Amino acid sequence: MKLNSVITCPHCGFQKEEIMPEDSCQFFYKCENCKTVLKPLPNDCCVYCSYGSEKCPSMQ
Picture 1 (cartoon, rainbow, N blue to C red):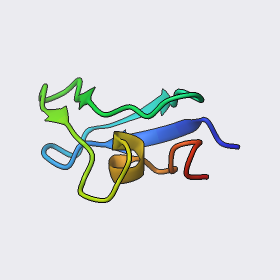
Picture 2: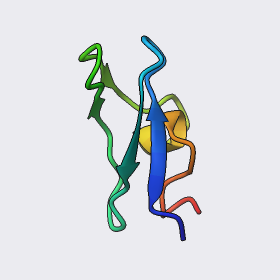
Picture 3: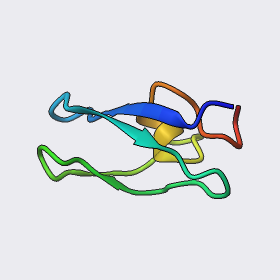
């Protein structure tokens, strides 16, 4: 199982590698660059499934 995912902000394009939680979904993520709070897209369980390079552990 992969726990590292690169989140890409859809507003400014900023990317950052993060370690995903193994036991829960993350519903909100604040971009360090533009400060936009990201939320999952419809039909996605978390921000990693929507904006990450890897799906969250529960979807892997």
